[in-house]
Length: 339
Image 1 (cartoon, rainbow, N blue to C red):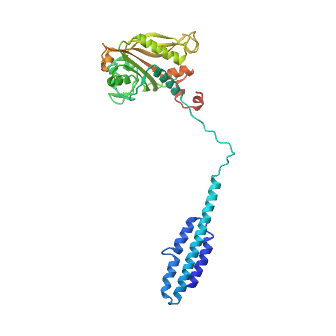
Image 2 (image 1 turned 135 degrees about the vertical axis):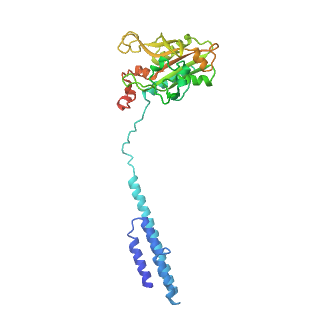
Image 3 (image 1 turned 120 degrees about the vertical axis):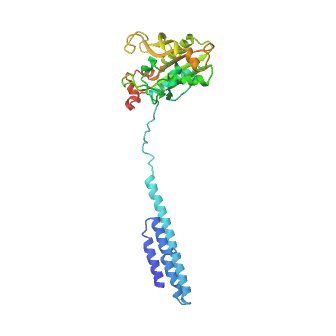
């Protein structure tokens, strides 16, 4: 037994110094000192020794155990320090090296102009309202005085989901939802995405953005409409900007008009942007039709109001002199980084 214990001590000393991982040390400890380890197997033979030999062998076994445990502890500390050195070497930073520049993003041109439009109308006391992009036929058409069979439906090339559900073709349904929940005075804009089955070209897209505006109160007139939209145009395009109203027809407003602004490139003298006319069309508007007020639960005998719809892409293209709407959606960084 003494020879076995001495051999174990030498084997342990030889193997421990060659280990490079702490996991190897743990595996060695279990195989030598564990409940089923070699030292335990040797100690089971103590019963074969005489009473005189047992104390000496027991002392030697304890010395071997203590020696091996001490060697394991020292080697473990050594490996810990080595692992720390290796980690520090691997993770060290050269603080004298130049850093890598992080590219910062910025707003999309649509967001730039939309935020400006919001700020302008916030300054005039408007709130922002939102509504669902998947809309009922009732809110998108019928409540806005566009019943089934009305020719205005044909011009909007609608994406229908079911017979009575569709992707909204305008943000005007939001005004109906607001009127149902809120009584006058009402002063809101409703920006958002709309959808129409248009072929993609330089001025058309099946997805685009509108900004609906609605004001309802007692005594609202076309004069209020003209004054607020003129203020909007001046703040967006400059104090020298003028607007003009041209008669038009929309089923949900009466009277209706198209709003033009004096060309902000040539000042109204005529240029390629305004096609030599000196004016650029930017939106449609009018006084809210009495039937629309009734559908929204508002008494047209007591209240009146005006509404307008702005195509966001249109004013963005004018603002930044972009000649192709597709550039706004292609995500080409060479284009977007200019703004």
